[in-house]
Amino acid sequence: MNMPAIGRRAVAGAAVMALVAMASGAADIAPADQRSGYAFMGRETRAMQDDDTANPGMLFVLDGEALWGRKVGDAAKSCADCHGDATASMSGVAARYPAFDAARGRPVDLEERINICRGERQQAPTLPFESQDLLALTAYVAHQSRGQPVAIADDPRMHPFIEAGRALFQGRQGQLNLSCAECHDDNWGKSLAGAPVPQAHPTGYPLYRLEWQGMGSLQRRLRNCLSGMRAESYAYGAPELVDLELYLMWRARGLAIETPAVRP
Amino acid sequence: MARTLINVPAKAARGEIIEIKTLISHPMESGFRVGFNGALIPRDIITLFVCTYNDEEVFRAELSPAIAANPFFTFFTVATESGTFNFRWTGDNGFSASGSANITVE
Image 1 (cartoon, rainbow over the protein chains, first blue to last red):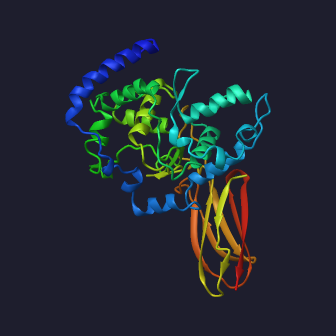
Image 2 (tube, rainbow over the protein chains, first blue to last red; image 1 turned 180 degrees about the vertical axis):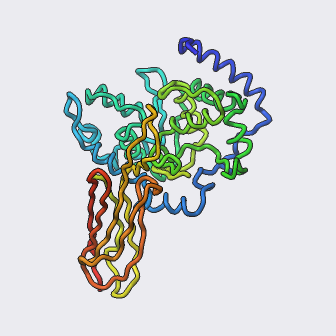
Image 3 (cartoon, rainbow over the protein chains, first blue to last red; image 1 turned 135 degrees about the vertical axis):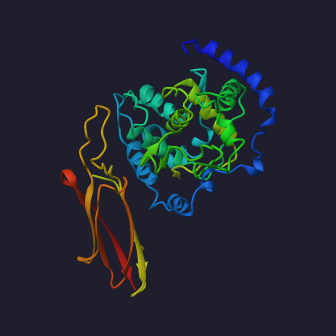
């Protein structure tokens, strides 16, 4: 696993070729059949998400709003000092993430973008993964895109990363020898131990998960899934997780952003 | 202070049954879990929630360790006169939070 990034991409690229040939029987979900995880939830959980005074994710959005205006770091700048009113400047942003970062030559997700801004513009320490502040800021930014369709840009520079994410999604891994696609492409709508299998569209992150009793990022969810498959989880911030995030968002094109979503 | 979300209708007709919803951020640590070092995480919960309507108590709940994080309460009362709803949450380690909302009854 310590291959240099270029080597890893090459291997992933080769794996894609093999997988595309192999997985041609398992079709992608037709656009008309695309459904958010919301559609698979019970009535009570849907009601909790729909009511902003019952949705516990809104507590984090409000925290994020306060953080947006707070001056931090050696630059003593707040997010608002550069970006102004988030309801205007951040509208639609989450629908485009993960997005390609030209300086880094790779896609970055919303959490990393916020931390890049903190490090470079605010000259503040980066926020740890899954910290309350990072989840709150991400939720506040993503909330400004609620209702807007996921619109990952069709950028040729992104294609290798989308393909790498697809390879991770479709490849079998772990002690159970399962792929993500076997559940979420081939068997969505059926039950797994009494719980419906959704289509794995990450439209509501960061979201409030009742099982967690708290907010969590898409990377946390992916790590959960991997340990459920008894596969080795990637570390937070690992390029594999960002590739997966990117592929999943690309796959969810057209579905509406729901942040902050509530999930069981 | 803990963040709260309070939903009381701004206006109601006299005698109308109104729904009140409150949400508060709190970890509700049960006291039964152990941390990574194997030591018990001390209990830290909200123990009492009280709602008053023009200083008269209309709803009270005693909370237990089995209640999930970020407790959400929804309950009903009769709109009798214009005034103020006050909400107070108290709990372990001296926890205290409060909020209020006004209603106009016509």
